[in-house]
Amino acid sequence: ATGATTSPAELLQRRGASFATVQEHYYDEPPRIERGWRHHLVSTDGRAYLDMVNNVTPLGHAHPRVERAVARQLRRLNTNSRFHYASVVEFTERLASLLPAPLDTVFLVNSGSEAVDLALRLAIGATGHHDVVALHEAYHGWTYASDAVSTSIADNPNALSSRPGWVHTVDSPNPYRGRLRGADAAGYAADAVRTVDELAASGRPAGAFVSESFYGNAGAVALPDGYLRQVYAAVRRHGGLAIADEIQVGYGRLGAWFWGFEQQDVVPDIVTVAKAMGNGHPLGAVITSRAVADRYRDQGYFFSSTGGSPVSSVAGLTVLDVLRDEDLQGNAVRVGGHLRDRLRALADRHALVGAVHGSGLYLGVELVRDRDTLEPAPEETAELCDRMLELGVVVQPTGDHLNVLKIKPPLCIDRPAADFFADALDRALTELTPHGPGR
Ligand code: PMP
Image (spheres, rainbow, N blue to C red):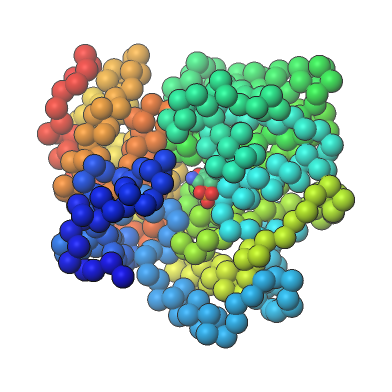
């Protein structure tokens, strides 16, 4: 066991020796975090940090109801879902009840990457079409297929030039930073529709269009109004299916909507969920219609040894119970709305704050050196994140330019903590070293 007296630096050195370093850690000199409680993380030197990044724990860290339910189930039984027990039935019923018709059939897996991988295979299996259309600046996972449709150059600088031939990408429909701005942003849908039509005309119609339903990886940016309606219609016209990746944005985080696709007023053919589902316990799901699920039967194999296990099902049910009982989606509306107002007020006093994107407790503070050219401010963003840690806040950048502070705390965060964050950011912005011409 790792001794409580091991220093963070010594432990970091050991981590570097055994843990694959493809996966970076946050911060050059990270605190050693061994405990969490609600929206706080506690380091071994006794410091509490406000956690503004953990969308995997929507109920907050160490929630006692999840702990009790999982511990009780581990004492009783944990096995695979080829066995017959109630919790997996109740969990799939509950998930299906959260989605509109015809999305009534659930596959249970253990992560977001697996969910996207399976969603793509279901679409290809059901349509017999092997080409897929994806957005720029997207992240969907690390498995072969989910990585293939991930285009974010922040994660992989060669992402756009290294996609396999079956992946076709369309321009980032980002109304703030994209080629088309403001009212013109509606034109993004026409761009994507053209790509979809051209693929079909070339004899390779898309089997699927995959995207986040709210542009999470780009910095919590809402897609232009009507975007998904037009693109989904084009894909379906040529026999393809629409996949909505709700892994970051779904499950109540947006406040006004439980699912991101509601904001776009569409119903996808396939929905992927993970992250929030298990409050940190590995859970993922793909939800589709019975017809799409059935067509996969003779197309491929599906069985997950731990997906839908009794422990996973109980964890998933308990998370949904607590989300409801503690009205955490309502909290995302209330605290998220207050936080957004506070952050927008910072834009009046700090030229670096170009925009505050997002909804509920899924917000993005985009930092630019010049509000006209929108020159991104990645160095300033990195410096702010380091300074925020000193001030007791964990926050990280996102987007292709790594210039958006992504705000996605546990949904239990309260108003005083939101104010603490806004005050700390105000202070860090005031103290920031000037970098570019706009400052
Ligand atoms: N899709 C989206 C939108 C994500 O944000 C992520 C995780 N960052 C994934 C898929 C992959 O999920 P996981 O890390 O659970 O495999």
